[in-house]
Amino acid sequence: MASEPQDSPDILPVPPPLIYLLPLVIGLSLRRLLPGIPLPKPVPRFIGLLLVAGGGAIIAWFARSMQQAQTPINPTKPAKALVTQGPFALSRNPGYLGMAILYAGLALLLNSLPALLMLPGAVLVITRGVIEPEEAYLDERFGDDYRGYRARVRRWL
Image 1 (cartoon, rainbow, N blue to C red):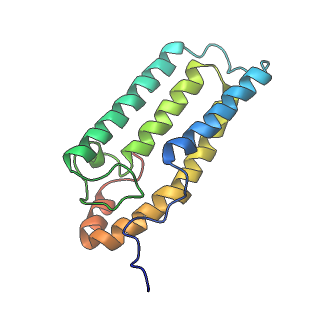
Image 2 (image 1 turned 90 degrees about the horizontal axis):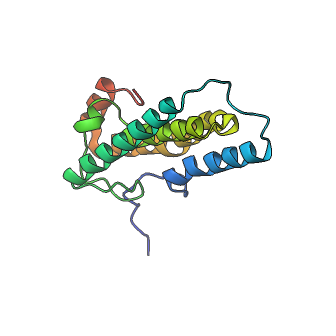
C-alpha cells in the first residue's frame, strides 16, 4: 500500500532552534576553555542586551502572527495559510532572523568571540537545510501567491 506524500517541507530532522543553540553552546564552551579569546574591547554590553531584546521581540511577533493565521509554527507540520502580515511583511523568515539576532546578542553579552564566529555557520545550515526546502514547499503549496510574496519580500531583511 503506497503512502501519500507528506504535506510538509523536507527539512533537516533537527528543530531550527537547536541548529542555533548547538553552535552557541559550543562557542560559549570554547570561550570558557580558551579565555584568552575575548571580543575586542570595548564591546558595550547594552548592544548585546538590545540584540537579545530585539531578537526575542521578533520571535514573539513571529509566533503571534503564526498563531493568528492559525498555521503551525513547527516547519514539519503542513502550512494552513501563507502568512504575509506582521513581521512577514519585512522578512520571509522572521523566526529564523529573530533567532540569529538573539544568538548574536547572547554572544556579545557573554563576550564570546568563538560563539559569534560560529553564527554564520548556523545561518548557512538554516538557509540550506530549512529555509530552501521550506521555500520549495511553499512554492508548490501556494503557487503564484507565494511567488508574488517572494518577489516582494526579502528572505532575511
